[in-house]
Length: 158
Image (cartoon, rainbow, N blue to C red; front, side):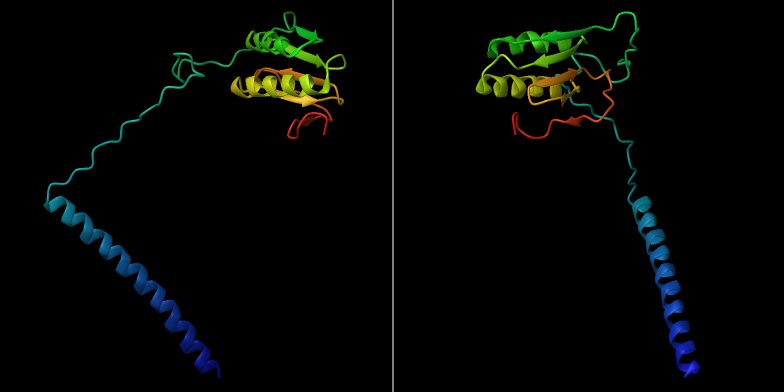
């Protein structure tokens, strides 16, 4: 019985070694064929697609901005209608964080405002978190929100 097991394992291990050896020889032959035909692999050029988020700056020129604690501003915003969402996004563009209080707007307008601000904040690489059913915090990309908040994944008022 041990002889059969020994023969089985030695045949299988030998077969793997032969397969590797065959693959190595194949690769050498293939490279030689390329050299015979004068094939030379040209270096690949890095191609960058323009992005509307870069605003004309290449990645190498972009730097991460640091925040001076003395100049950090947080705006508390109580919109009265959907059109106020444009002003909220403008604040986020200026790297200001916004506490969004939707207690005084209709449920429908509140949903529209949160959806619009969520889209804008996504485009700016920021984040928005739900504090209560009617209060949200929206921050630009250079802020980090810590705590027991969950990032908004579901629809407003759900």
